[in-house]
Length: 119
Image 1 (cartoon, rainbow, N blue to C red):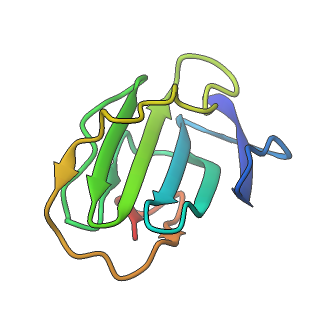
Image 2 (cartoon, helix red, strand yellow):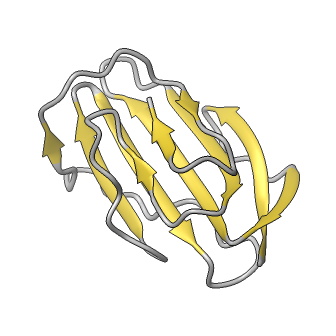
């Protein structure tokens, strides 16, 4: 079990709450057309998230970068130590382009469900 940051923010990093689970989760979404950035840090008991194109994340303890439609996603699922869900290194220009449809930029998911889903 690891202790993790648990918070949400628009436009800036957050470090306010705490939670405990098998993995920490860092999620950042940036809408390219407007520059709006949403950050969520949380706990999860599963080692992956599901993107809006229904494909799972594939990296553990490292940052994963994807672009789907107009949204750039940064995701890190980690269990390397307490509060490991911190910002991913900037990867401007290194986004993987994915073709799919995204209706919302919010992230929803429960800690004890079968998967976390990015939407």
